[in-house]
Length: 91
Image 1 (spheres, helix red, strand yellow):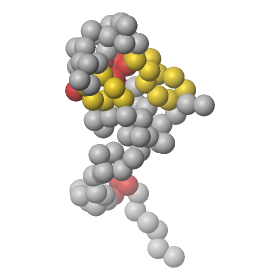
Image 2 (image 1 turned 90 degrees about the vertical axis):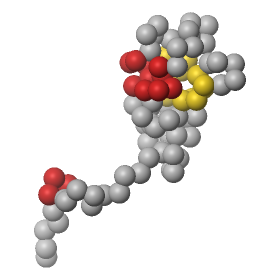
Image 3 (image 1 turned 180 degrees about the vertical axis):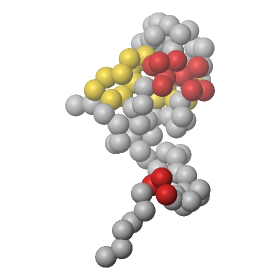
């Protein structure tokens, strides 16, 4: 029986890069961002910092989260300067 290499022993490029743009990864996370639009300043930082592109700015100028692609990482909540985004556990 051969021993499989650990991920650290794999050569660069051995694992393809895949983002949620190609796959709906929203089921992966344990929490979802909830945006308090009454406190949002429309600064767009959440949109730009979201590593999966799951936050889009709507025609109304406010951010909208596509939960089909959000992994629940919380980067948006951390980067929000007015802290109008909170992470809520999925039920």
